[in-house]
Length: 291
Ligand code: MF3
Ligand code: CO
Image: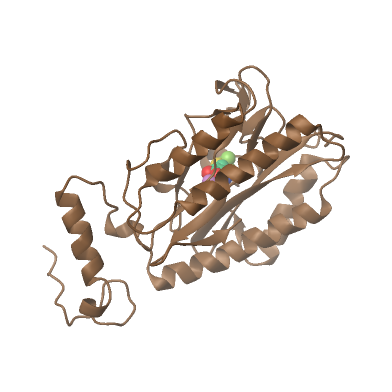
């Protein structure tokens, strides 16, 4: 049995403030919503100020790695070299690349080119070519705190069609981000993302989504991008999750690489793009932790 927290006791979040002036009213509001049938996050998904600090430091490394990649990526570079950059910068900063050995993943970063939807494995046999589009998905563990974000890069002369896909998916993430506010719904995010993708003639991958993050790489909730407004988990300050839609120029059907058991491709070989941000729900809206 857990002892009920008194109103004058220190808040459960570790702020040092009294419960009654810290999280009490939020807890009451969540209990009310839950009794009305809404899906509210369990307390463990609401990060404390201390945890948020840790996640911000982790995110700083993640962003630094992506900035380096952005600065140096070009035709002729192999994805193995990108992997080495990621490993080196992350470890020099005191972090650990989260993908390395995650469920047996063999490298420090995911590099997904053209028709690869996600989870591309860096290789010395894959050199970037003029006209490629590539997603570099970086994730970091720092003092036990996880961060995760990814960007697209256009290599040299990229066709207008591919460039448009890359740009529209970025817009999708930005539109999704605008939906992040306390007492909104997770489903509001996917609703605007799939609307914008489809308006542009693209399809949205349904089987793979974003996720809560912080104390683990992948936490609840699962974040899908074909959803309806007003559905899914209620957004509450302290939640941290990723917005990372995978959007295809052709069909949204996908398949997994049989040999490596990781890489996901579009069924029809059409181009696929993804951007990933890691976002914190705040009292007033959102804060981007990593992009
Ligand atoms: N970074 C991916 C994500 O956004 C997860 C990759 S798992 C890995 O959730 F093992 F492939 F790295
Ligand atoms: Co992610």
